[in-house]
Length: 393
Image (cartoon, rainbow, N blue to C red; front, side, top):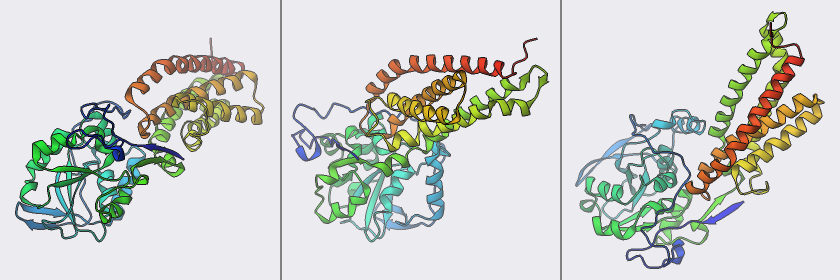
């Protein structure tokens, strides 16, 4: 299991706060980077809830959301794991109520990415609380904090927009710890009058955190990236690998169908079948296998870990199937390149990579991936020709 102490940011006056991973040498103005991709897009539609009501307050009606997730919530989150409806999987910004909160109830801050919001509210069963949802452009807390969309200005803006100072007595906000790189507590207090208290890393610890007087333990400050979590986030990468695999497979079948006696899709599929099976195994080598074995595969770069997984699994495959040297070499090269490329994207699911490191990795690794893919394709075409495919006259 990988563990990492995740940094909160410094306190109200930028003082040293060891329990949050801060230091006097690291000013609050310094922004952490994440490796979650390019700029976020504006959300065009929002998700609703299975059951909801409203609560009359001094600042108007506030939507009440259930702490229990329904089938629609679970199914929607499942689809997002595989990249389906990912770009609009968000809830509207603003204030929500769980249970029957009053002016003494705690206020918890969430990104408007629905999976982040759901992860928080499902842990609030039996608790009366307010949830302040800020505009993270439909991106999870950690990635949004790294990009700057889950940050100080948006938090202050949202506090004022919902008139939170007129709703609660305590001027305190519980902000998820993974959002700390984007939130400067002293500026939030200066701009809104609310004190920022960084909660635990995991939403599942929120009850214990509240019961302890909002003090997080060392374990609650530690980011873990165990086997189940690593496998949980492989869905989108697997879909990416399968899309590449299907495209390459289709091209291979078409190329192999141009036989010396004419075009034959059946003959083409027969010639390319072993190649397609190898790519399917490569898709697993690019996602599930390196994710499961992440701590034990050598190398720091994810592209290298993917290449090693692809090389080993494809090597075992060609050995067991007793393929010709040309076919075997082609499959090993293409599988290694595919696994390296796809698993490099996995950096966006880990909290111990940075955008700078990813850019460096791309610059180093991509030329090798391209070279391996070009050589692999060339060998495969030669192999198809030797098997009777490709009509040249």
